[in-house]
Length: 273
Image: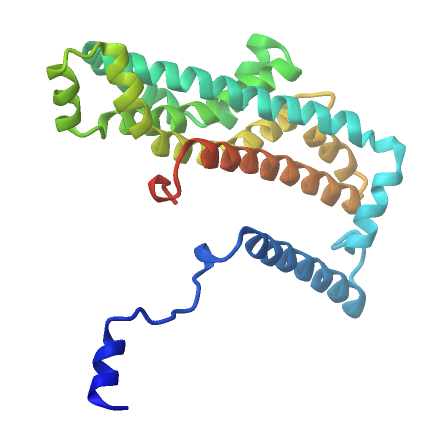
């Protein structure tokens, strides 16, 4: 290659392999599904090859076979747990964002009430479970309350941080243009805080599932957690695994819903990974 050719091609961009984030969405999802299917296949093969007892580790085929048993009432129990997960999560989301707005608008309230909320959040929710049962009896309502108590603080904390991360220059510009408090919030603070809000929402999805199951473990007469306690006594491990898989599916569904909302409201570059 001559010097002229070298100079002519020096300014041209060179081809680089596409990173994971640059690949088409269907390829990324296909990779995720493929990994999960491979793990299930390896699980099935390991159980059959080592002849593991069913009560220790059932094969995926045995776990799926429990869905045909009407005695477990999978549909109704899954619906109860889903109501507790989504209900407690939605309540925490609404109240968490509203409380964050109150704290941002009132420094005195932030000084007085926020430390108390931090202290209350340090109380183990499992320890509070029996008290919630005493105060509110048992059932779907108290389990929603336990789920709410786990999800509320992460959403509140990240929303407050997002609202506080607004650039002072932008705030001063809107104030100089005689912008109202609502315009300041609508056009500056809210868009800037959304990445932090969704970050807290993702963390809360995991806690929402844990809260619902903990509530059902403590005292309940329906739900997947209640079913796990019942079948565990008889060493019905396939049914326990099936309940765990359905609980996990609820958590994944909630997380995917949050990801979908994040894609609708936030650009790729502004998201907090």
